[in-house]
Image 1: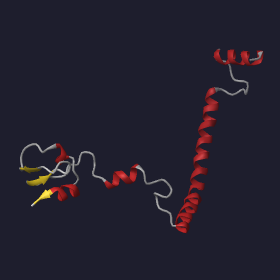
Image 2: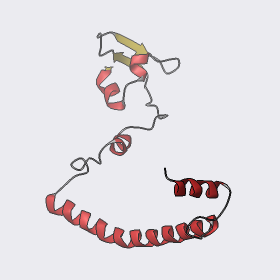
Image 3: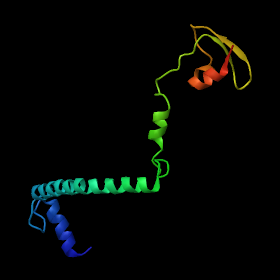
Image 4: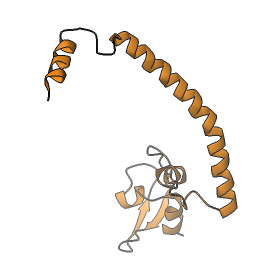
Length: 128
């Protein structure tokens, strides 16, 4: 660190104007203006970028999975919401782990293995 940089640091700490002669408020206003300009340019470029991406997706017949976009959003859409419960109709159900058949009524707590099943799994486990 040289003498000039130390002096500059001390002058900034003491509230003196920066070497550029601009105040903090002036610099922040410039930053704000530049950010607004950058957003306008980004929006203008965005349309052509999206059009280019769509054309390449169509040309190469790509899916969301092909480009790594099928992650959590696709998984969330495929499964029910976290709070959603599948209704368990009264009847007999076979435990897929041990083959035990359990009769379930309309009221009361359901076994954990049964309550954690999806609708398709419930249909497969139901015993007539």
